[in-house]
Image (tube, rainbow, N blue to C red; front, side, top):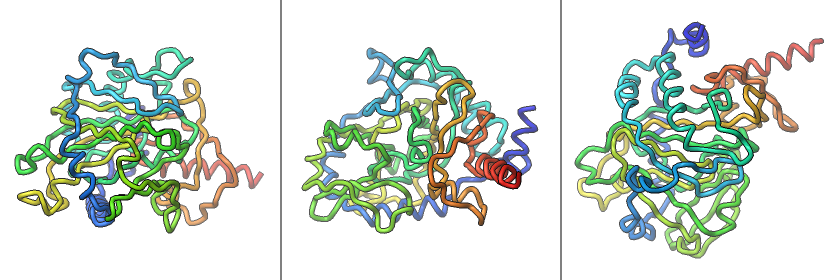
Length: 344
């Protein structure tokens, strides 16, 4: 039954779409051009280096409720290395779903929502799966996808499959940037940070093109005023980062900057990472409140009659993997139900 559902979901003979390489390269280039890293490079160079070993003697259970901030840990999960390496080539929908389920079974004991009992597979809805090479989001942000589910508890998973090549000289992974400033950690919607040539920074609403020009939320005279604690993911293959949705992070841009010798061209960094977001349902199998006006749902729904909702919708996503490879199938089904109701 799972295989049949996945074949229907993918519409591609059981294979999910390949990484959108041209898009990712364009995003990487755009972020590098749009940010001036000169004033943050010293902090990056001196960042604390963290890995699974950094948490070996600490409690591995993080709060992933909607209002939590700066919650993250790293654990070892080497048993999934081979399946993820094979997925890069096979792009098998069934294998991807099975691999994500295995990973969730490993990590769910390490997350909690206050007031909830231990979470299981029926409590979660993984979405936005990606397995791609490169360091493709070199701007400080927390993920815009969470605007689609603004009230949801949840967390991100980021699994290191292959390290950057030797020419990267230990760079090219990812930075976490937890902050102690209240204005930074309490944002109800995803944000991104722009680094200006004069050393100042702007915090912007992170809606991926929905607001043009981007809506500024706060301006800092310098990066130090954000009170960021730079931490570099010096992870080994087979380690996985778990972080609450409101943790600022960014791909490491340094291999692509002129100061790096040799400079590695965008699209040529060999780092391979898997990332997926995990929404926690209000109760097992429960429908989830969703905002269908986000650009990602527009783009992936592929429906010219898509309308702007006046309020939150409640989407009854019954199958755990329905949003794993995008929102198109679930959104289209939701709209079809609405159309049927309107016809009486």
